[in-house]
Length: 55
Image 1 (cartoon, rainbow, N blue to C red):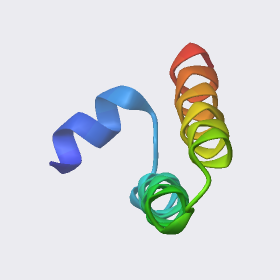
Image 2 (cartoon, helix red, strand yellow):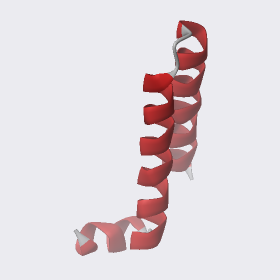
Image 3 (cartoon, rainbow, N blue to C red):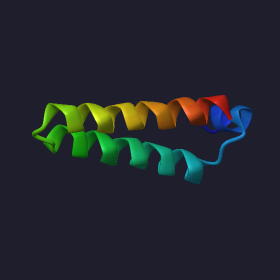
Image 4 (cartoon, rainbow, N blue to C red):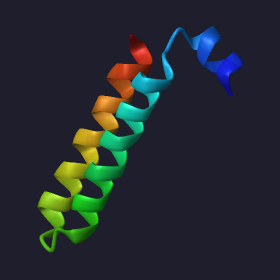
């Protein structure tokens, strides 16, 4: 795992922060009753992941 992180130039702490953000947003989306708001939360999470991948 650490070899992959070194090649990606990302620290373990940064990876944990990203995964925690994704986990929290997906949990909030799951708990959201309104479908439109749920989809907005999921879209926001996907946009954040995409931005992270492009950096």
